[in-house]
Amino acid sequence: MVYNNLNLEKCILSYEFIIPFKINKLLYINYMENKLVYYIKYLEISIHALLFYHIFRFIIKNYMI
Image (cartoon, rainbow, N blue to C red):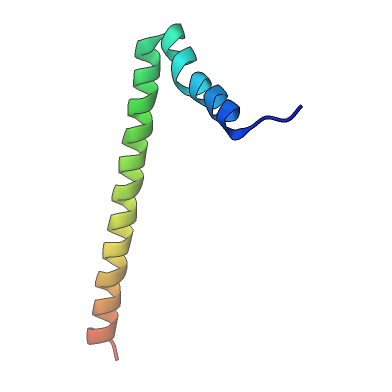
């Protein structure tokens, strides 16, 4: 049986959005909020890592011989 992309997308959309809302709206909203919080924390850690990398590179380049 061959599925076209539209049917597959409909299945995915119904699985992602419709079924969890039917089961428990609050649980699904909480899940999405947690995903967002983890993503923001990941971005924050990435930005801090990048910042520290540039600071240490600057210090080593200018003050170490």
